[in-house]
Image (tube, rainbow, N blue to C red; front, top):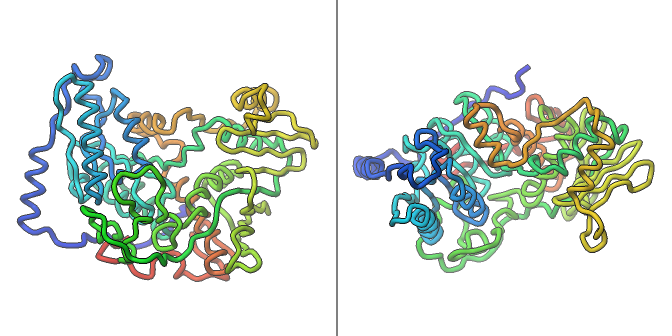
Length: 461
């Protein structure tokens, strides 16, 4: 049974292209750089098989993606895009300098755009990487897949439930490869923890605790002098045109994660930011990738509460937002705690494998404890989960094979929808029944919560 409802997508360009803008775009496309000569790369990568990349959103998160791209011979970055001139120009220089060093000759072939539509329109780009703030993810990703691009999009996948549903529909219609950047699925400790649950090693798991930060708050910061070279109207995009403050889009080059993610207008705070990691792993372990929670419970004093919201799954398992260890699974036979680089398995009340604190667990390593757990408890496992050793490489492999990657768009959508449902508990005090098949409330909630009250400037999903 199809789980995505038939919804109408209104996909509008903010303005109709003028003759001048059309000619400008055409000139840019005609002047697009040629693929670097094959002598620049190893002989193992033929130019005809090299994947070309455009990067949109050149902040801290993209820095890692760009570095990964520039270190690989099988792909070439042709263009970057950001609404901030400083970040945009620095990214272009980073690419040009890297390829200059690789070629041994001056290279200035990386194009830089303020308008992501100009980048997506290029026929010579195969892959789009999206690392913008959350409120832009769905609109840009839909434009990219409609243009025939394969997409790697950062988590949380969409700003609201409606956008997540529409994005899946568009990816399936375009038949594109789409990887959500929930990279914990490509880390061994999380996969093994999920396999322990799936194979019943812990017994019946009736409780899961997930640990991450606070719910979102409305944006209330005062206006400050605008950052020169920043297209603030476009930064705000589908969201409200709020007063500029550098906490949202920092001045100059920065090496921090800006606080737009903590706002209700542009993100979902840590519920979506880190929940998109830990709730994602929980649903993987609970075999809920094709479904989701059936109920949401608000904590007491929900107006001020920062922890305590719960999601309930069809089998009665209760997932609770806590201050804890990352992701904790509690079963009748044992429990497992997992976080990045950390792992603990407790059976019958006794710790059998643990690496959590490097100052305490000095005689072992996370890798050793996870490998031993696999050998002792999962050697004959009936359920073996998708084993990806590199999230980005998995995406590239799937672009070539045309298979779905480890965190396909539907998985990313299911995870972020669960995060949004949890956020309803904090923002609206929701104690409600949720229908994961139809992605709407069965009772106790409002359909108005599933989308924006108003999309601004024609950027409508």
